[in-house]
Amino acid sequence: MSCVAFFRGMGVGLVAGAAFAAAVMTRKQSMKTCVGRGMQNMGNAVDRVLGDIIDSVCG
Image (cartoon, rainbow, N blue to C red; front, side):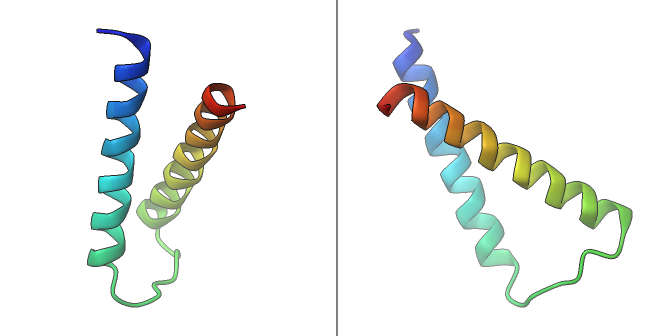
């Protein structure tokens, strides 16, 4: 498998997961629980990694 195909697949998976999460969360929820904060931190980390990948590939 080539590096480009891997990153393309990862990007498609991340976009699909984000779209699913946006569809499931119909209203704004407060992040008061430990699980909620963990999910928010993981989402932020994925956003940063995806941004770095896009910058390295496109930039």
